[in-house]
Image 1 (tube, one colour):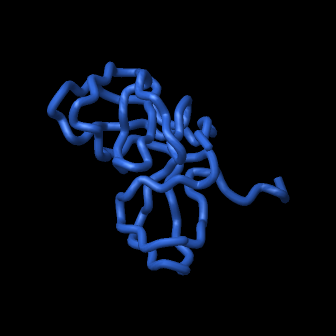
Image 2: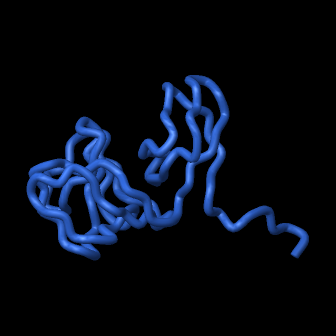
Length: 120
C-alpha cells in the first residue's frame, strides 16, 4: 500500500503546557499517555493504545472491564458512575484492565484509541 503511514499507535502533538513522561494527555476526544516529557510548545508523542498504570481517584471503586471517566480536574480516572464536569472524557476511550477499590491511587488502564465523549 502506497498510502500507509503508520499503525496509529502514537500521535504527534504540540504541547500546550509542560507534559511529563507517563502523563495522561487529552487530544480532542482521545486519551493517551505521553511517551516522553514534552515542553510547552514542543512536539512530542502520545501513545493512544496499550495498557498503562495511571492515576486513579482514591475513592473510586472500579470493576475490571469498566469504561472509565477521565476526571480532568483531578488528573485521574474515576468510575463510570462519576458525574462528568467540563473537560472530562467519558466512554470507550479507556477501560479498566484490572479492578481497583477505595483507597487505591493507581490503576492499569487499557487505552483504546477510540474517541470518548468530552464534557463541555
